[in-house]
Image (cartoon, rainbow, N blue to C red; front, side):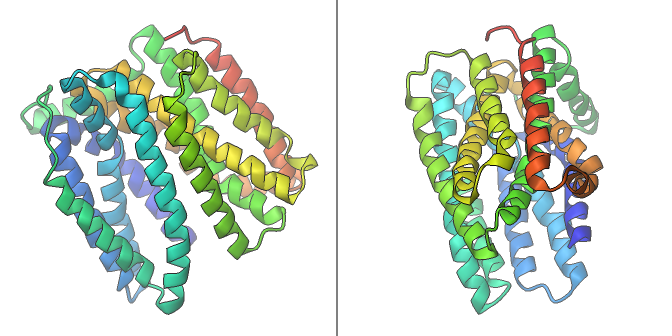
Length: 351
C-alpha cells in the first residue's frame, strides 16, 4: 500500500506540468476528453485487477495521468468560457457550485463505495468507471472558447512548460501571491492527506464512523461552498485567501483540549475552510493570468504545493510520535501554519 501511494504521488508530480502546457497549447476540451478517457480505462482496470502490478499500472499510468490532465484544465476552461461571454465576474459563484457538487459527490461516493465493496472489492472502481465514461461522453458537448490556443509543436511545448514558473515568480505581486499559495497550500496537503485521518483515529472514531464523519463534513462543506460566493461579502480577495487558513490553523491549535464530538465539528469547519480557500485561489489566479498560460500556471502551482508532501510525508509519522501524538502535533502544526499565513499574507497588497 505504501508503494502504491508513494508511486502514485511521484507519478502525479511527474505528469503535472507537462499536462498543463498540453492543455494551453492544444485546447482544454481535448485535454479534458483525454482525462476522462484515461480515468475510465484506469477505473475499469482497477476493478478487474488480479495482481499487484496490474493494480499499480492502472493507478500510476492511467488514473494519475487522468488527474494531471484534469488538474487546472477545468478551472481554466470555465474562466475562459465566462470571459468569452464577458461574464468572468461570475467565476467565483460557478467555482462554488462546482466545489459543492464535488463535495456532495464525495459524500455520496463514500457511502455507496462502502456498500459496494461488501459485494465485490472491485465494484466501487467499476462504478467509478461507469461515471467516468459518462464524463467522457459529456466532454464532446463542450465548446472550446476562442482564446489564445496555439498550434502544438514540440518546440512550443517545451517553451510553454517554462512559462508557468516564470509567470508565478515574475511580477512582484504575483511572486508574493505565489509564495503565499505555495506555502499555505503545501501545508494544506499534509492536513488533507494525513493529519485529518490521524486525528480522527486518535479521537476514537472507528473506520465506519470516520467514513460517516467525512461524508457529513463533505455535505456541510458543500452547502457552505455553494452559498458563500453568493453572499455579498465585503472583503478583498486577499482577506478571503487569508481568513480560511487562519480559521483552519486555530482549529488545529486547540486539538489537545477538545473532545471527540467537538473535534468532529472542527473537522467540518476545516473542510469548509479548505473548500473556500481553494475556491478563491482559483479566482485570484485566473483573474491575474492570461488565458494562454492559465492551465500551465495552475498545474505548476499544484506541482509546487505537492513537492513538500512528496519529500517529507514519510517523516510525519515520526514527527507525530515525537510530539506525543496527533493532537499535540496538530497544535504545533496549527501554530506554525498561523504564523506563516499571517507573515506571507502581510506581504500581499490588496487585489
